[in-house]
Amino acid sequence: MDKFVSMEIFVAVVEAGSLTAAAERFDISSAMVGKHIRSLETRLATRLLTRTTRKQNLTEIGRQYYAQCRQILADVKAAESLAEAMAAAPRGVLKVTAPLTYGVEVFSAAMTDYLNAWPDVSLELDLSNRVTDLVEEGFDAAIRIGRLPDSSFVARPLRPYRMRACASPDYLMRAGTPRSPADLAQHECLGFLHWGREGIWRLDGDPDDANTLRAGRFRANNGQALKVAALRGFGLVLQPEALLAREIESGHLVPVLDEFLPDGAPVHLIYPRDRLATPKLTSFIDFVMGRFGV
Image (cartoon, rainbow, N blue to C red; front, side):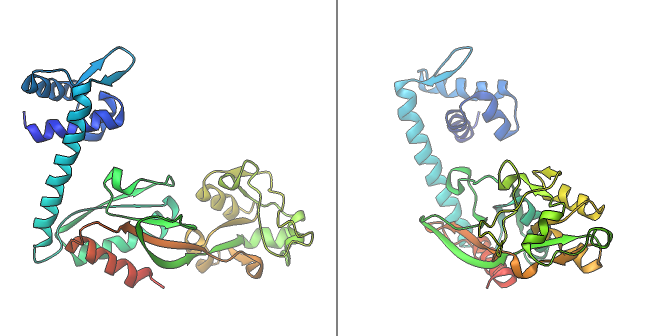
């Protein structure tokens, strides 16, 4: 078996915590993962892992071998990156992560334009609302929404992520158009559960200065589901403009209370400060800043 592949799989087993998780990462069977581990142990004439039916542990030699494997694999990757940087044009696989709604509604369409401009680059776009570890998970860059903690990453500002409150024309004809946050007490305010268990709306200008308003009878943890409910005339939806833009433009949803909405959330493109500036990463940064930068 290829020694470097076996080393990569061994490192993955240690970091993922099991043969099964490592198998999923490499898209191979758990049995094949086991063969790679046994191949290394045979080559080294020692045990690297002690396994029981419930868990596995590194031996003392296994701990030292794991640390050396990580360093060797990092050196190999750096050497490959250096060779790639010497190429005349961007090429290779670019791994990027972005929040789900932003990625679907804003970012993914622009990425097809980027790939058309650079035909030798492939893109792996991970859309998830979890905060990924760029270094540990091997991402080249990420889109982050919200305030950033202090870190060693480079952070480039993009256009803010604005919210809009909307309702269908049928709903507004039936229930009336709210003119201030106080009016929302008489309306169905579709609740987004990522704001908290009750999906409470928070707007500026609430007369009691609490800036909280009761959510309606329909709450969900997905903005698309709330948009569908609003389109069917059930109530008012408060979601990112990116998710509602097409329906606002077509007139299927009508914006309300714009002057009471909070400022848009900050958006940044981030990438490791010490990441080698390969042509593919440089071209990606330039494209994103040209398309979405402030």
